[in-house]
Image (tube, rainbow, N blue to C red; front, side):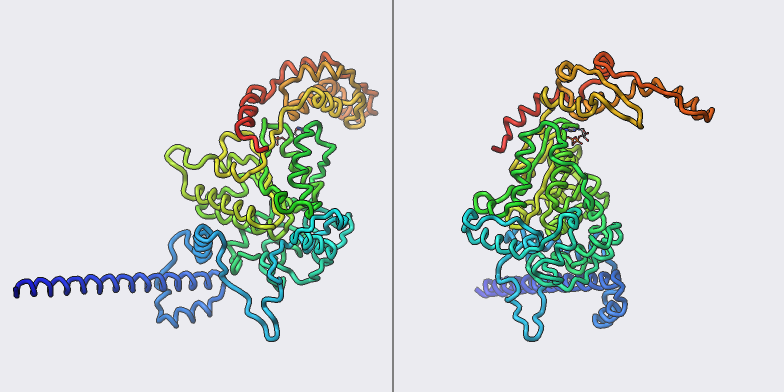
Length: 526
Ligand code: ADP
């Protein structure tokens, strides 16, 4: 009996001891977390040049933080970002980490009226639609009202995308509104980032405002914002729809998906809410980039021309942050188009590479997906326009998010004919010399089946080069002797010449066409 009591006492003692140890371990972990956070804050302050504050922090913590340093690739922002991502995955929304303190006499809740609105709706001049035609939905009505108040930017002042005057003339005047409708004072540190990116002061003003989602905008984030800002088209690429030969279907679909929602937002609500992701796929050299440039020219959206090199950073963690910064900037400058060229090199299928995928790359891809989801849920006018020559290599999760997929096919026979006569019209004047052509356009177009637009351009260029090549000797000897220019007559480019060039230039993608159409059948979006 007494031995049983002894055993029970021993057991209860042991369990108390274990509970006590567990509590101690918890406390230790909490203490370490606190300390790590303090060290991160200390390093962050130092990094920002707040030396006195950092020293004060160290003193207040009894000199505990100075003796440690932060491990590689960890910083306060990374921790915050990871927390945000965690929060997003768990609750499908980003946490609110900070909020502005109300100033005396100010009603904090008055500023947005509870309505989340993309910055663009306040600053962009949206065309008005006859009220009797516009949908009566709350959203549509709200947007229409905004457009009425919207600025009136004369076409010449809205050079491209980043139209400063439209911000100034907007109903909000000089007060910048960020994504969450919070007014900010416009003295953010993006200023330097933009300066670094070589953006002129006209455009800079648009970027001056602090960005939401960038707590603190540290030096590192500023650098990343500068990297991405370099990829913003500040000048129109000057490609009009009419410059794109053929591709009528693709043009129509792109207009429907990207152009009209920006021009007529009132029409694109509810079930018609605009596509957020659009994939242009097809053989190389068929005009995918041209289509994107036409969007940039015609829509006057802020255009982010992003290639893999812009966001694939060799530094672990940077790519992920770059993606984040990219979408933040896009939202900030909405309406925006993010053009992801050669998507397969950024968003190839995950985990298929030999020996597994680099952790940093996986995280970058996940971030891209998270950001795309964020777009789908938001009302921000930000579109992702992606182009790929190898759609079958794309990650499936990414494909699902690119709801609209458009095959940009090899040019049809009439399109080929139009291209040849566009690049080699009957009379050409290279360098002031007349280049005559005698071409049977119809025959040549037939002969060029399977050639892409860029192949055809190359063949035209090579054909035009032949007669020019023949006069090089005469031109060179003329320069040597410094005599008057002899009368030079270029030979006419004939159908036979052209056919000869075709014979030496193979189409680059003919064999792949079946694969594209098979893929189209499988992944057709509508
Ligand atoms: P990709 O589909 O690989 O993005 P691009 O759009 O860059 O191809 O086209 C490459 C070049 O080929 C263009 O700069 C243009 O000169 C020519 N080109 C291709 N397709 C067309 C087209 N449909 N109309 C006019 N030019 C074209």
